[in-house]
Image (cartoon, rainbow, N blue to C red):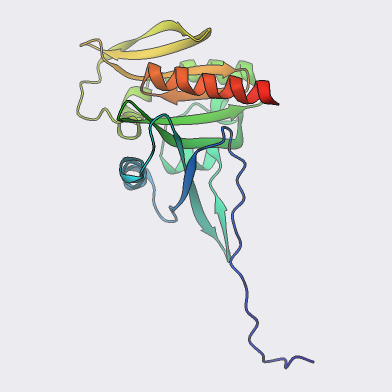
Length: 208
């Protein structure tokens, strides 16, 4: 029999995350107590220093302490922590599953965010409403804080997907978003990233 005062060793709980797109590597980033600019600073720093091979995907899993356990942030929790002015019609349509990471393409580190929805019509309408504040809110995460943010949205088709690109007065793409399918919203800052991720998703679907 064990003594009632014997020390019981407990193993820390591991966080199990099923990635939307299988990454080539991943890392957990504790973000308890961080929000807004400080949270974005930590994310941008991790995405810039982590070693990624060319044409590889890196996933950054944001975690927070909840009592004695550690959990990964849901998409809605991330939106709240970033203080994004996301319309309620969009926010309520999001599921918990999402993905944040970066890709290395021809020596460039390119960030991306993937959100998922179970109500396409509301998500689509909500994304259009969010366009008014997206250029300022995404500047830090998408890496264009040093560029002029005045511009317009333009429609384009990449890999048979409808894309909404935001271009500034100089014609530079600051960010873009697309419904890759009715459940999946991609936000990134490069057409090359969009094409790469669509290829990965199609290949993943074909294998299934």
